[in-house]
Length: 336
Image 1: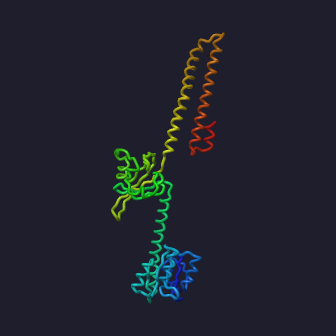
Image 2 (image 1 turned 180 degrees about the vertical axis):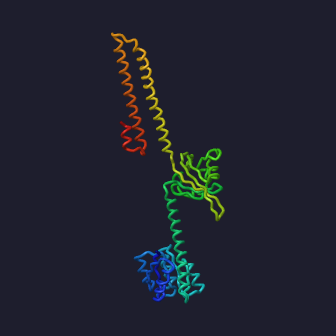
Image 3 (image 1 turned 135 degrees about the vertical axis):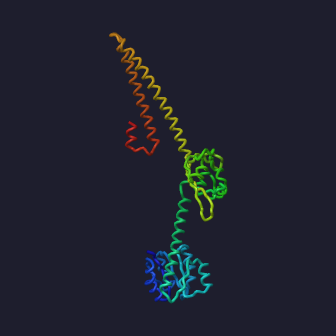
């Protein structure tokens, strides 16, 4: 249901509107007989559209429109007047009116037209609000976002992108060649960045980026190809994050795992050799000293095994602390 404020000094016009407009759509109508009363309504309510007569005492419809535009730039405002002079219509649209409907003796046709104008204006407002919301979401995204054209020139960069590349302002980024900020590498088949966008209209992968000071960073990036059918132009939309620290952590973990594997491999090899030697000696045991020698070797293997267990505990603890996605109960299990 649309909440409408209708302003007219003639009570019969307002009554007719409350009768005929609901026949064309779902409306809730507040009726004001002057601009002063209308402003009182506006101080306590918000409206989907305002409909105002042109000729009213004290303040006319155009003056009321200018007041409204100082308060709200987006609310649809339609002049509904018996005056159809060209200069009035021109001034109304110049002042920010969204529609102009001339009153007539046929209530069905005039209120049908008024309903049509309200529908157009409210849809336009909703579309503009949705667009602004999307623009705000993109601009304030934590992900870096850019757009570039077929000439590889950057035409948009949000705040996160400007900051990620180490620049102070958008003007330092917009207009640059996209290849100044990214290392796309060799195009191999359909897997390269540009060939994937051309053939599949999308790309996802890891690349190297470049900051303003020349420093290289690791990037995880997704991109899509966008066609503007009206202008017959192609654009590319990319969203990405800096994964440099993540890559460093992965490299450090790999080094740790390599060292841990070495620390496990050496005592395991030692245990295997000693067990094989012990097996060979079992058949040669005599009653005097061989049993003690065998026991000693086996106790050494027990100690080596215990050391392996401790190494595994340390490894598991490090791994579990390094990955937040591991459930707590599983972390407890692998750290035992």
